[in-house]
Image (cartoon, rainbow, N blue to C red):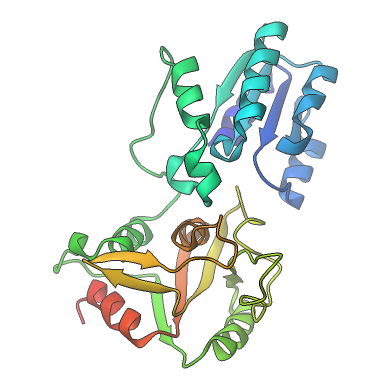
Length: 267
């Protein structure tokens, strides 16, 4: 939606978008093909001082650091330009993002012009319902039937990774969990699309692996500590699942987890 707004504004104004993740080829294409739109990664946010523009849009703002968002607000006031902050609290993936006061700063700064989307408009109803129930089994509607979600049990992580790679031939994008620089527990994964690399992107069909790192407690999906203790497995999973437009494929290597997830399908 942010990019649709930027495109509409670009017919009359020069627009700069600061993206809170790694720029994808799609971001670069937009910058090249649509006049009056410039997209830069958050790490280069200070470059806005050297760019002539009328409107600034921040994308994935919940990933910014406090210093970055404070500086951006200060710069926009200095330049007297309009700024649109876009964020989603549910998409935070690390303890540092949860502990950051970025969202509170935005709410305070934009208290008179703060709008909330009631539904995630890009997700189809089946996927939205499934993801909701996956995280909270008490939300299951026994009369609801789910399409476009497939579950496959695989006995171990290595085989699950190999199957996920094969599913690319069926037009699935295999999204893996961001690894740790200091721990090799996730190195069995083999995909160019980790949860941090797909920030801000969407794919028709998504495949992910759920292993022994996930479990249920009191009907709520929980997760073990990630090899990088700053990352939150549950949130990395949510990031990956919500990249899907049409279909989800989950490869599950944990029998207890499988038994609980099948309840969503009324099995």
